[in-house]
Image 1: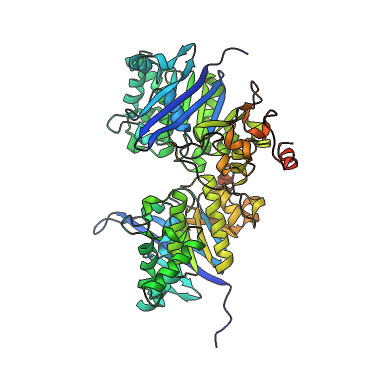
Image 2: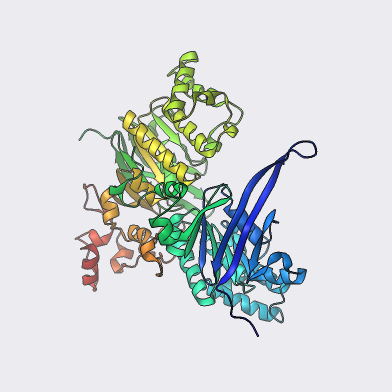
Length: 275
Length: 337
């Protein structure tokens, strides 16, 4: 019998990624500690925002979770089990559970694949759908779920606007029925009126499917709106983790305070950046 | 009130495309007073950057051209100037900074050489005097004068943008055009750059035309803002009033689509539909197909700015008493108060 499922879906313990810069045989090696001892938990069905400035290491963390980069040290636990204990077949099954949506859908979608191919490729790899007709039906249903017309299935990425392309990228992530999605700056390239559509969609999908998100972003307005918890990264380390209220109303670390005070105020009578 | 520094009248910038004439800027009028900051805010493709480029006669040719209008700067119509005369204004009386400083700096010359060149080309300073001023300009934007010997690739994005600001200021321009000056920068660096622009404006009294998509930046630095949609301004207002009470349905849509903590758990407002193609703007109100308040007149009669001659006109029939209102007039009354 299964034990009761823990509320935590994904855990990271002391995760590091160091890139060798110079040195070697006779010289002391020097490393860029892109990620340096990072730990966090993400509760099932919730959203953790990983915020920080360029080069803070937030996207490197995402890449390690997705298996795109091998950690230098540390452990990632999915559903309580450590990655390092998984066999090859189990790792493949895990890839299906963990999907990603990147900032620039134009770069992340293959320009030579139409939407059908993009949406069914993952299904074929993971053995979803008995035959092409069934996969096609699933792909059309996915398009409807992300707010596109099923007739878009024949079209190529360049035929869509930025917001529509991001919907296609989301549909592709959903095509293998994941439980966890890394959202790496998914709205940073979009206009605000399109950003709001994508945020609404992400929220609705989370609600309907119980998805768990790691939301990597530098946009603190989006974090306040969407995330359940926040980890603030600086120079490869998490300097502070807490709820929206803890981080935005009572930040403990100086770096968090600096970051918050740099956000432009939307109230012209409360200018922060006046000379 | 004294004469404005810049007065733009009915500016039109068109592009010939395979699908027809794209009216990227289509009848834009505004003025900027000395020492004032006007922000033009809008989404991708609304024509805000093309407006800025048109003022400087930098519209990409041959597809693009200025189809008409006036750009009166300090008493002269810039659109009447020859290319050579215009070169005498660009970088001297009108400074400019763009989003990506790396593409504006020459990678094979030192920072010092580029700053000195900016002065020598306009004859505002030469030789040792120019080098002296270049060093001072760097210090003024918070950089070390020693940076003169370095190359652009040796600097961070924020430092490069400071160099661009220093370069645009060495000739003491009366107007600075800043097109998305902080969009490529981290938020803490952005805050430094915006503070710097505020400080320099106070010191020099220059006017700033700020082009941005970010309402937060508008709130922080602008005195007045113009909201642009589909090649036209739809609303102009002092910033405090715009943020207190956005009036045009498009402006309202923009504000209510912003994610914020007090909207947690609710859907954000969205604008239905997409921006129409610039070769096929709707013939009457350009926002009509997407507007939640639209009624019959909106697709038939082109809205005028109302009230005319004031500091916060809106291009929308909701605010024009001469346009018959729809059946559900209570809703309109509630909206327009």
